[in-house]
Image (tube, rainbow, N blue to C red; front, side, top):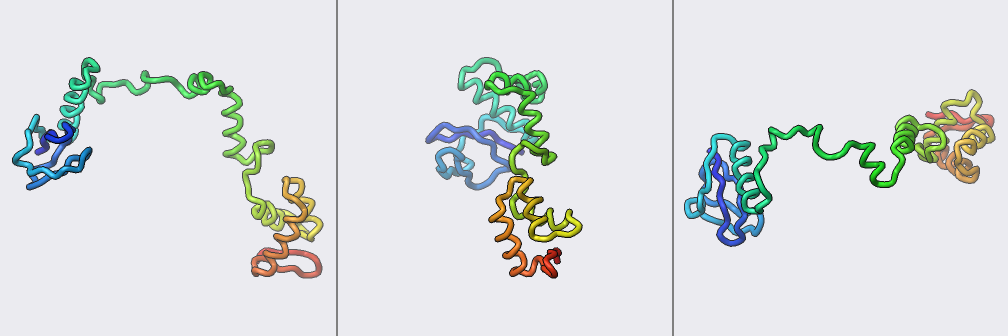
Length: 171
């Protein structure tokens, strides 16, 4: 059993399950004995009690007629994404293209991988990943040469890569 009750201090309404000895107002945090609270309605399910509470709040706010949330067609409410973007001054097609670039790591969409990831990708993708080849690969992806050389040294010292005869390999 669910009961819609109200706070005598701040006039908040809330739903209480079963019949607890005490309950606390969610708004002002005042603790009340359940038996001394005014029970506005009782319902068998929490959803039904929530609808009753919503109707009471709507009536209290004088916002007009209460609409049952289950009867609302959510597809017909509000505006679509493209309409929202256009109203915000954004080009919906440009936003969609930027989203595709970000999702698929396309060029021109800004850096989608970390600098370290680019260096590690170079070690994986190149047949002979020498320092110069890794630098060339990474600088083409927008990573500064000074970072690439420091990263290779750090990766080698950390034991993540090995270097033999000028060729780097991931471990």
